[in-house]
Amino acid sequence: MSKLLEGKVAVITGAGGGIGREHALYFGKEGAKVVVNDLGGDRSGGGKGGEMADKVVAEIKAAGGDAVANYDSVSTREGADGVVWSALAKYGRLDILVNNAGILRDRTLVNMSDSDWNLVQEVHLKGTFLCMQAAARTFKVQGKGGRIVNTTSYSGLIGNFGQGNYAAAKAGIYGLTRTGALEFARMGVTVNAVAPVALTRMTEDLAMFKGIAPEKIGPQFISPVVAFLASDLSADVTGTIVGVQGGKVHVYRMEMSEGATKDRPWTPAELKEQWASIISGTAASTAIKL
Ligand code: NAI
Image (cartoon, rainbow, N blue to C red; front, side, top):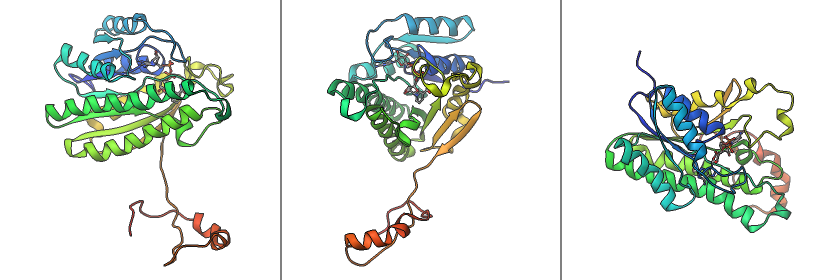
């Protein structure tokens, strides 16, 4: 039986540990040639090194797969281009980009420093944009097809106390995913995102994971979903945000309410009076109609 990703060339960012490492191992087992990108720093973006990516490459090879390491930071243009270039230099093409690299610098909004804000935007939001752009330019030159899977978060989609910088970046990735899906459709490229919940170094101190066995909430639940979104099985799935948490898989959707209409500007008093009808119901379509 042929493997799900046989012959595909995949770049996975932040694949030296946590969820990204699991993606890389899973993709390798499913026959993909994998560029294992990782800057090799700590959870908050400090430090760097090649050891993390090298270890994952060795694991993939030991299991009979094919992989190459890349140590660039996704947050700079040279870095993002370098990650995609690794795929082209080693394997001659690119089929799949999984944007997974990330850091955390949790602070409440009143205590947030410029550097805590900036670094989180640079790694998550700018890094996702730069890698998407480098991959899309490559897909365009190659002809038809390509897969992009981004990584967003409950925090950005719903909101989370103490994570204003991270939530804003992850909400931005939602917007990039939706817009990329529209812009790249004509190239036959799908763009989706996962919103994972998994026990890793990023989440190990969260109270919600206390008392749950790692095998019930580990990254191993996330990677098959990402592999599906990266495969030929999902050609008709794009612009979709897939939540995965242990064995539960669901989607996140942005809704518009039905609303209420007047043929003149509303007064604040009318808004107060009719607020309940403005916020109730769900519109059948999210298209803007004037
Ligand atoms: P992790 O900290 O284990 O993995 C992140 C990896 O990204 C690390 O190996 C790190 O070295 C790498 N990285 C950081 N900055 C980089 C850069 N500039 N360039 C290249 N690589 C870089 O964390 P985890 O949990 O595996 O996170 C993976 C992704 O999933 C992140 O985007 C995170 O925000 C997201 N996520 C994770 C959740 C969870 O429950 N673990 C929840 C929601 C989202």
